[in-house]
Image (tube, rainbow, N blue to C red; front, top):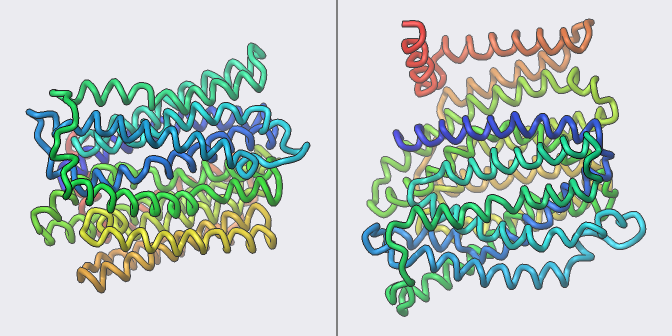
Length: 489
């Protein structure tokens, strides 16, 4: 777990540094942009993300399954870097054509979509560079360099967006200029990662013939096909809500949803670093048939992610209502935050279940699960949005997250006899439930500022006091004690 903990910590620090920059940008968005304008920027992001995820052509699944067989720094990993570039170019061509054909589906038709249609041309370059970024980021992760992509997307991208909103605030650019800078920000990670991947590859060479022999071609086709299917269903689960909201409610609803989604998604930040670096470690463990290591990683991921995720959800819910008092036009988004945060918490509390399946020989099952869930998400969104509007989209997301993670957990329990849950998990869940109920029903008749202070400090002290007293997360306790010894002796 050493390399996972080390790089996960770096990733989390970088992610939250980026989130801090993103929070300032989001605050300025909320103050100086209309919901429709925020919705337009969100659609640039979500539409390009959907196309890019699908037209990476399953490269992630291919790489996770076959890269270990070609890992050799001396011969440039059999030319895997240039193989990734060629693969990405093919995906870009197909992705751009697909978006051109389906543009009306993504951005809408009619006068109410005039603004987003006038800026939809920006989606084309974003798709181009996002496909390169996604594929080369996977390549670097397999070289145990998981921090690079997090820095580019987590900090650099957000700094460029922040610069854009500052220029807009100063009236140096109009909204179209801001949208162009937003598109540049989404594209920059793809530009830079090409050069970084080139530099990281000590011996750049043309793809070797062993990458294209009969056996390799069969594996690439097989893994790629399932990777594409998994990407389609996966992106439906994560991104289709904004597209459906745009079509069924309007672009302003997308704006409200995206602002609250940003807040709710903060809960999952710590888990992202663990997942990124865990994939190559799990890949090597499966290769070496080290099931004990896999079970250890899986079990610890559940406990550690649960204790952090539950705290972030509890503190976020406690502070959400008084925080929204400062931006009353977004007060309708309170339960959007609740359900988005709950969905992210479900995902964290079930640990690395997707990554364990993805890196095993049973990787196809992950695809089957996602196909079923993709269908359910569309159905959930349709009926929930009709009934509850923007809150319905968030509730559909939470339900989808719960279902997919329950299915994955049950599969790993039955197929591989992997059971990650323990008494500590139950106690963490019980503690979180009590605190959520307490902060929901105990009202403090003070100003929002004082509510933020009292709820924040009180909830934090109670939660971590119980966690440390009962030693619910041993790894976390040891890490905190290590910090205490370093700074306090």
